[in-house]
Length: 112
Image (tube, rainbow, N blue to C red; front, top):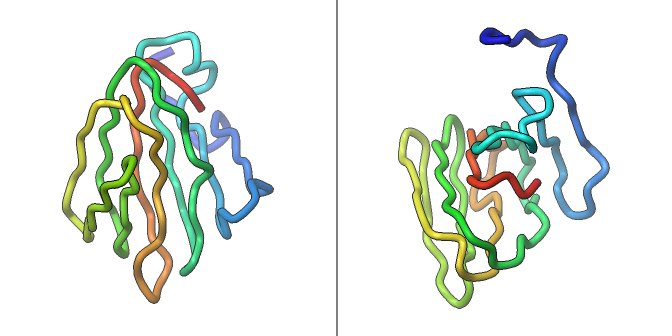
């Protein structure tokens, strides 16, 4: 399959601290080289911390602003900005703004 629709998306909303949802955009992406997800968080929301692993992370902030917590380092990323890093430290995303945020996040290899 090449094109995926809303019917193909798997949504997770019960993650502790998220205050939003994670949408798996491609079914069975865990079997592929990349895993694209859409993260939506209300103010104060954050993803679960991901342990260090082989691979890389790429993201594009579609709305709002986030902070990337990468080990001891914290980077702010605003709407229409991107991030890219090696996954060699614990990492998570935090909604850094006063409004909801939306982030397209691609992990390789899949870890979500």
